[in-house]
Image (cartoon, rainbow, N blue to C red):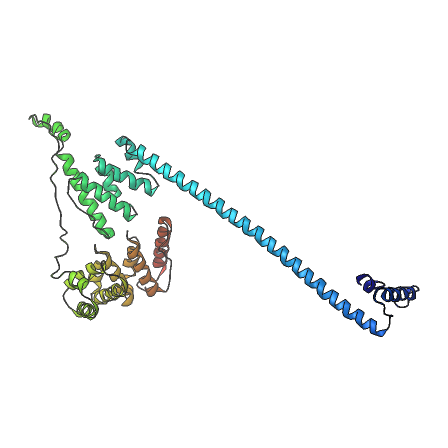
Length: 391
């Protein structure tokens, strides 16, 4: 039927052999189906052609679908293979790193003090953290280098350095406290360096050098380090404690927060700041808002001091208070706060600067140390370009 239907297809009617083709078509139709070729069979032919075209299209679509499915399966197999290969590479890398770390730890724990001293300058923060910890555990007398590490940009390394120097000093503790401001860290470092000078001045070597000059022989004995616990003298102890706010629930807790908001006692600010670190969720958000509300009442000079407070929550609240009060006289102080060692304080200062100036030069929470320095430089450049006396 396919041959009969396509026989003479495309031949013009006025062609010289058109009649012969029609005769052949009629003969084929008569022999195959026993029916003569007329208008009725011509209609059947058209219907057959349409049916064949539909079937051919369906066959084409089916083959296309199979081809596409095969391509998808090939692609999925390739993707699965690539993912498996990637996972294998990651696993190999992880195992290699773990093995390398273990070898590094095994090696570094046996190194001499001069090698550890050089490794403290490593650009790898993990290496610095590990070496500081080892120095503290082995009680290697590298106090000067550990004190310098208290200025490390990473809070985890600063904390490790603090723990190590306290261990080396047999319990003496000049800080800095966790979350300390930049000024607080500088004060702590200064105290530690003064302590170290006192230890050196009383060392057997120093006394032995001084003895011939004084004409009095001195017997060299090991250093007897006297443990000291230095309590911060900048702020009196608050009258209350954060426990009441932490233990209260529901309406009782909200009532206490309202009391902190409306209370005039400065100790409420300290207690509230100490409690915030232990609160969570919506209550913590409300407590921070109330702390900012309290700090908004302060004069410009007192608020400036709060921007350098040793408590992180107070520094953050003071920065946000500057923005809430639209206190443009503190723009310079807020730019200085961008150098704070704690990122929460940096972001609070940035939020206040954005509100006060309409500008945003960063730094962002995930900015690198270099990007932070560039952001501070951009703020300072903008600040210097402002007309004198006009924030």
